Image (cartoon, rainbow, N blue to C red; front, side, top):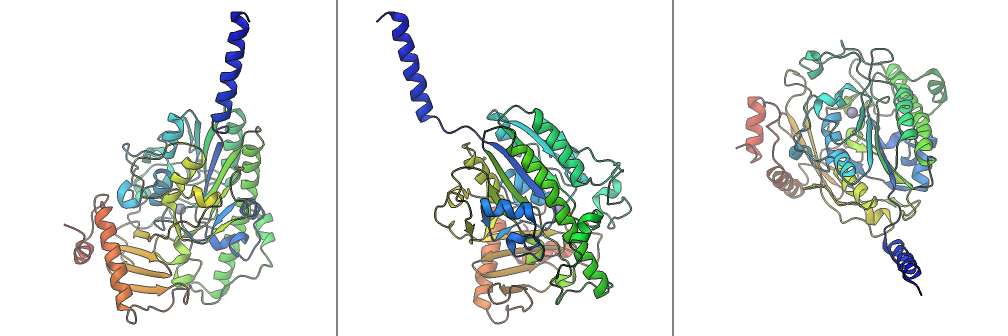
Amino acid sequence: MNVASARRIWLFGLAAALAACAPSEPPNVLLVSVDTLRADALGAYGGPVPTPTFDRLAREGVVFEQAYAPAPSTAPSHATLLTGQEPQRHGVLRNGEALAEAATSLAEVFRAQGWRTAGFVSSFVLDPRFGWSQGFEHFDANISERGSTMRKGRAYPGAFWAAERFDGFDRRATATTDAAVRWIAGAPEPFFAFVHYFDPHAPYVPPAVFGERVAGAALPMQGRHVPGVSPEQLEKLVRQYHGEVLYTDDALAALVDAATRKSKRPTLVVVTSDHGEGLGQHDCLEHAVHLYEEQVRIPLIVHGLGDLAAGRRVATPVALADVAPTVLELAGLPGLPAPDGRSLASAARGGAEPEPRPVFGVRRLVSEQVKWDRGVKLSVRRGTWKYIWASERPHELYDLAADPAESRNALGEQPDVAGELRALLAGHIAAVPKLHDAAPLSEETREALQALGYVE
Ligand SMILES: [Zn+2]
């Protein structure tokens, strides 16, 4: 054997050995966040209207039946989605607060590992001026007044955007999809694309064709009420909300198609949301107010890799902070520094249910100037029990198994359970501080937090 052919055989052997031990081809990753999407607005979660694209992804993928946003608000939850950290750690507690440069986002990890990264957002709340573009080579927040559904005049007193200059507040799903699809078509692989849709957010103005599709749907209106809104008006608003969800479903179909059909490379698709919507429950139409289920329960669907347990439904409560660690493990990448969440990859691949863990919530209103519902609210769910602590309101305890609508405060009957959950909450905010850094607290709120053993 001459030297050249010996070398050829060695090279062939080396290549074969590398192929045998190399991980499978790194996947493309599409992370989709649909603003204001209640879990139970989707057919796959028992919703009143079939949502074909979400439902298909759920059928073919893995559904986390009880996933929770850490806050009923856009910026805190998106910072958690991108960092795997609780709001009290990343420090974004309200819209208009910036994600710190020191934070490590999913996009930064993907980019450092050789993925091409792009983000496409549909609301001014996720404008790059607030730190959202970290790690994205391409970040499209191209929102113009034309097509915007939310007007500048629609502001709470002291809302952060009142002082900002911007051309429009949001853009429609079709425009966001078009931008993302264009980038995906030209992107070298593997890529990580983050796409944020805004349409289920108020005002509910679905394109006519989607409004028509929900015209005859039977909606669960029992017990729903909003002060100053007639039952007929409320039902119409809820119907239009579902029309917006259907419109988003349609846009999602085109996006998922473009990502998954680009090449033979597998595409990990993760679909979730940043918070729910009141739709008349607990007297509230929108969100950012309560920590009740309708404002914090969100969908979480994982789809597209060959090793996922297609059709699985995971029952254990999980947190939005778990998404980033899960995405990285499924993509075969190292984890984030100091995440509060944990990877759910094993459950997604058909392993045991995740170890039960308490799930926490936090809420600060858009502005301390709002008089009608001030202060801080904190919540913890453990098993079927949920405890809600509020700086300016009576505390609450619910057994979600017996009382899923959170209509009967069981605090008086279960003082021991309430005491245990209150201690869990105090431990959590001691371990994950920073509740007060982001914006000044009112004196009453500060005193109330002091009573919980929190503020120094
Ligand atoms: Zn939002």
